[in-house]
Image (cartoon, rainbow, N blue to C red):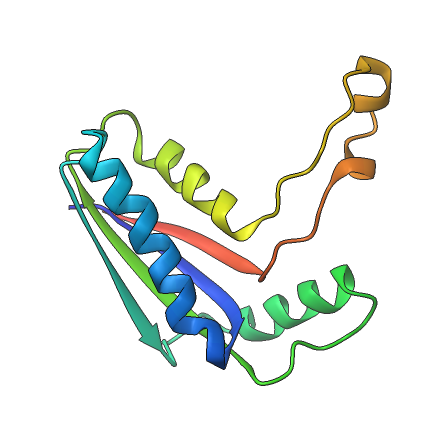
Length: 132
């Protein structure tokens, strides 16, 4: 059973809410038949590779005018999935959209060439890994 792992720098008071958002999304996919089953587990204080905590904090500072995300920790969300219709990688990218706000894109193709002008910072910085 593949596990999609998100390590997310989130405010401590929002960690359970992020788990709920992931759970709601995968439950909808199960209900629609796109997944056979799914389970979301939250791990506080996960063992992280060296530098990941600081990297996520720096990403937040870089994207939020040098502000720190106070009272926040890195949480790991293990999303165990079975019976995936399509690829696990594609599912992981769909789930990552839950952590990134939607950007309104112009219809003009010339304006779309400058992709960076339309990027929006993640709600909470995250890393992604797929464990098989």
